[in-house]
Amino acid sequence: MNSRAWLMLYLTAVIAITFVHHVPTLALVLFAALALAGKRRWQIARRTLLAMLAFNLTVSLGYAAIALWQGNFHSGYLLLVNVRVFLLLYLGFWFVAAVDLLSALSGMPLLRLVATLSIGQIKTFERILNDFGLAFRSRNLARPRLLDKAHHAASQAQNLLDKSVASANETALAMRSRGAFDD
Amino acid sequence: MHIPDGFLSPQTYLPAYAVAAGAWTWAAKGLRDHLDETTVPRLAVLTALAYALGLIMVPIPGGTSGHALGIAILALVFGIRQAFLAYSLVLLLQSLLFGAGGITALAVNALAMGLLGSAAAVAARRLFRPLGETVSVAAAAWLSVLVSGLAVALVLGIQPLVAHSADGTPQFFPFGLSITLPAILVPHAIIGIGEAVLTVLVWRYAKARHWVVE
Image (tube, rainbow over all chains, first blue to last red; front, side, top):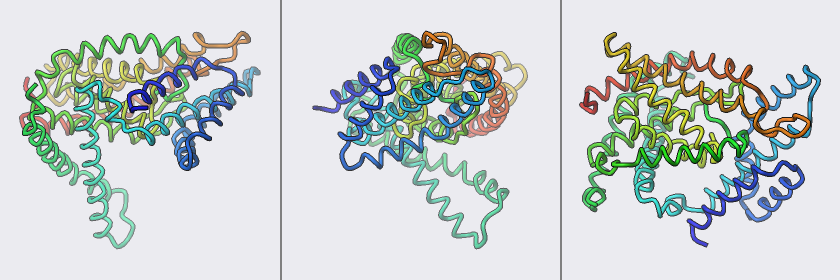
């Protein structure tokens, strides 16, 4: 199956899951997804758990507190919403891990073009921020104060933008030389 | 203020996708004419900036998150259409790479933050222009956050009404408008101040490099 077909399958599964309100069925689908994901299943499951933990904990605790106070607490609701969110996120991470996103967007050239550039920029940002962070740490023998961190961030912000503009310009010129803006 | 996956009913997100599809088509119209080797790098940089800002988020009790958007600067430099498209891409990448937001909530998040946020920013900039550049840009950023937050709060708050079982148990998001409106709007009124400061700084950067044509 090609990337486009996987994308369609993933989207269909996501929509179908939101129509199911039966916890055992959702759990069964989740077990099937875990079984089919192969060796990386626990790595994806851990990532899923970390991604959903803060939000779902906030909503779940908030719901429990309010519903108990109002006397209409349903534990089934908490189970349903948490299993559903876990399943949807798990499928998303599994899809990204298994399928090349840019090739899945092959039928949408403009989206693919902007996505390529933006992902490139995101990587540039990550690299520059990492470099700045390492340089900052190497200049501080003791743990820097919050104020020092703020000064560092402010002084590096413009440099960060300039560097990333220069990098994006290089990419755009390379794209121009390959005719990306000609059609 | 991303709405996470799994908290919106199909009765909400499917019509939202229909509306968003129309909006994306409108926004993409003529996009090729505006994209060249000068504008594309700027768009990519500000898109990446919006992406980075959106990832620094804290969960807030209303069931969503608090974070800066970066939509106002995109809208003020590139206009509503390109800002909406770029921000939709940001949301797609955030949801797929970090699980922030989600595929089912993508259309609602894109319409709330990308379209309404950028429209609010551009309208506020025009409205407050007589008060000076700094004030009008800051107001544009603050209002973009508030308007987006209002839309998100409204969509989340109607979930218990549109999707519940026979005994009244919610099937998706559990809190009504009386909780979502204050829970989302109050923190975002404060976050909006930070967004305003940041937007003014990036606006000055963009203006100094002649990115802004007014």
